[in-house]
Length: 88
Image (cartoon, rainbow, N blue to C red):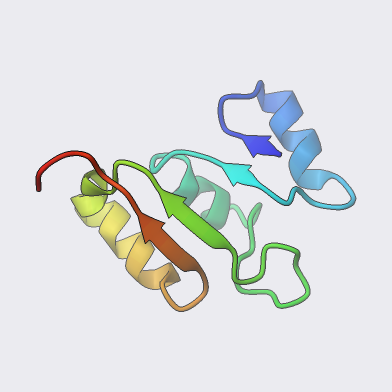
């Protein structure tokens, strides 16, 4: 399990591990960095993360331009489910 709240050294070991992590827990703020640094490849069919299920909590926060742009770019590569308890 990769969790963005883990210490940096532990996150690095998990991402570089064999096998790679089956579960990635991250924030809207950390997701672009993971993808842009090619630490999480959701487009490679040989990668264990190919076509992952992305669960978006507090999805109303995804309305920002950068997050919306990233999620739009990923929509064909991942399955997304969004949840919110906030009226939007």
